[in-house]
Image (cartoon, rainbow, N blue to C red; front, side, top):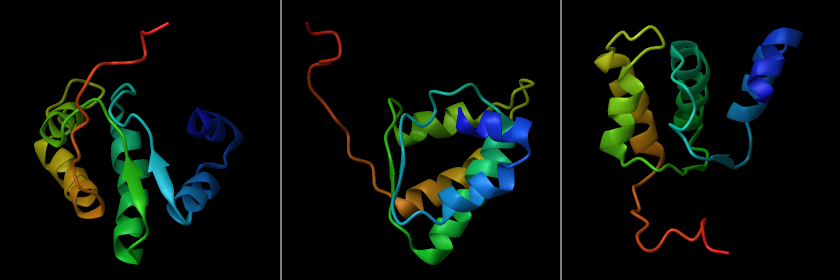
Length: 111
C-alpha cells in the first residue's frame, strides 16, 4: 500500500532505498498481491538484488510453495507469460531463503 502512495507522491526511489537497506526485511504473504510486472521487475527485483549482494537477512511468508510462486510470478499484468523474469526473481528468493513448509490446521478461522 505504501508503494502505491509513493507513486502518487513521487517518492518511490526513497521507499525502495529504505526497504532494500533495512537491517532485517520480512516480506509477508508474497504472491498474494495482484500481478504487476513493475512491482516484480522494478521494485522486488531491485530490492532482492541489493539484499543478495549485501547478504542482508530477508524473510518471506507465502501461501505458495517456491514452485507455485514462480508460476504465479510468470504472468504479467497483461497476461504475458514471462518465465525468465519469474526465474530471475526466484533465483534471488532462493538465494536469500530456504523453504520451510508449514503444515497443520488453519487457525485463522477458529473463534
